[in-house]
Image (cartoon, each protein chain N blue to C red):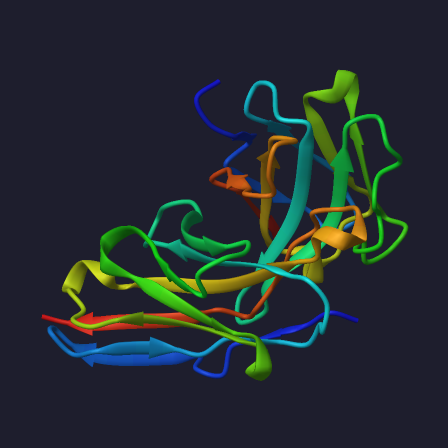
Length: 113
Length: 115
């Protein structure tokens, strides 16, 4: 596609429910990132996929968070048993293997009530 | 661990005023440096980047940034801001020698330009 696409754009969920957030990176980009943007907190790194290498999961805040990337393209971020502190904008970005410049999607605004 | 500091959290300027936003990072090795901008309601966009070479980097919309290695800084500047520059600005760093291109972002600076 022309850019990084994320869905849904907004998600309201009840505390304790599981949610899945989807990211479609730019076609041909080998690297994919997930970040979380909370008010006043900047962008918090969550996870990074590069090609077929093992993902860098060092930013995942708890074992309730997981992500996978199927076929080296689409990625899904799953949050189990959501908590109110999970409310944030979840951003996905991708980059080509030719250089580190990343292109961001519009994000998914998650609200846990 | 690598960290990025943006000391100005909120900045309010009048149109035509000069802008300088501070960015400092903690890593002493080779770094790639970036400024991203997020206009209201829009996604993050790359403003400018530094990989190597001339430490004075020019980006889009009249922005520039200067890499000062001795000060671990990459401050963003614009000589004369416009109302349309109202946005949130993020400094970011990654370490190419680490083998990954994981970005570390600062907390952002919200700029409001008064018409």
